[in-house]
Length: 109
Image (cartoon, rainbow, N blue to C red):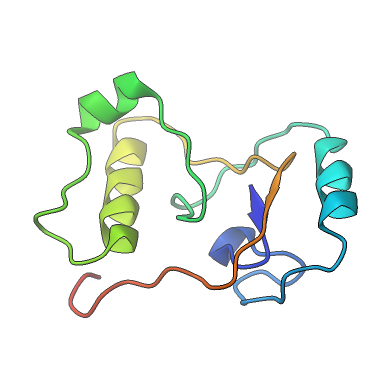
């Protein structure tokens, strides 16, 4: 979904940590009315993810042993899923408000 702190899905400015909007209900209602086109993203965005169980099993799940952060492990999983033919897409009909963004830990990426 869109987020004020959503990396490639940040709104209103992509790639930036934007303040939490004052009008969350209005913004959520506007997103809900967008046509669901689900544009492809380069990788998953960590503020909210939905994974198909079959895809997660096929990819082997999270590799928590190789990464120090949730961010690094989810990025790795989303790229492995893409390599297996699954897609990372934006659910543009929803909005998630956050106070901060996730970050990779030292040595993760």
